[in-house]
Image (cartoon, rainbow, N blue to C red):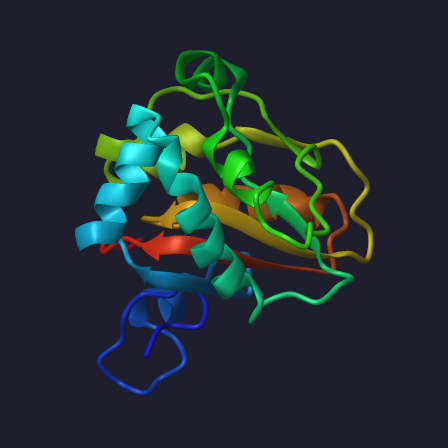
Length: 189
């Protein structure tokens, strides 16, 4: 059983974890394929940070499986954007590369959000640092009035990135925001 809002593993049959009850996120729901550990963690890290592109088809299958339970044809799918500096360093946009391999093609709008800054990699930051670093990092490039948005990311750690992106989508008029991630980290808000 997982928290419906942040996808944290629960030991009870409650819909929300204590963190989400006390400090709700701006998005309504998060679906995660699995916990960020073991083989899945190794695959994501190898793919994202060591250009092991051979893992892209597997990650696309995992993401597609997770997506089939979460969206309808009128849902706009928006991947969390990567800053241009990171793209130049990596040579590709890992999340976009995965999403483009899903067949049939998704109602994907990868330019609906842009990344304005990327202060530092979030990987070693505390929850408070993550929230501070991500503030103001996104801007909407489209009017999202009345649209249901599904944000896609690779790993949910503290929710700071998804929450900041959801804030921008809602400010741009989105009717609601939900999230899908490949994996759910063990950190909490």
